[in-house]
Image 1 (cartoon, helix red, strand yellow):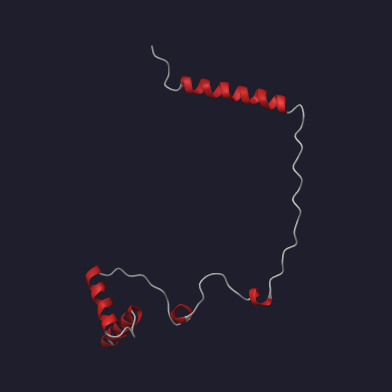
Image 2 (spheres, one colour):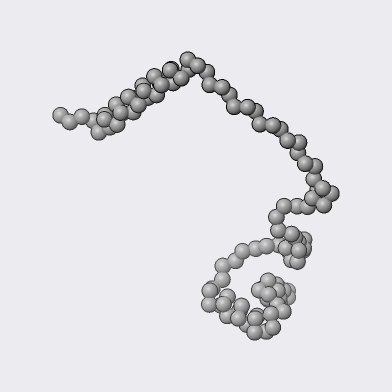
Length: 112
């Protein structure tokens, strides 16, 4: 009958562990010298300009306006591309957000 699949691997692992234990026993005879403790440096106090500063992207434009919220929608690729092209051809004064807001406003007005 054949030997189990992992017998050789297990015995090799056990031998390696025994060798490591023997080496660590030899090393424990003379305790190692601990490395010197790193010198503690005082933390620099933040400057007045840094105290009020937030981390990340600044909240400007619609992103920082509490009247707006970010949403995610799935749009048909072709329709989205055509809308982007039309917005650019119109002079670029409107962005996709403005267009969607205008369309939703008109749709809501028609419903009431």
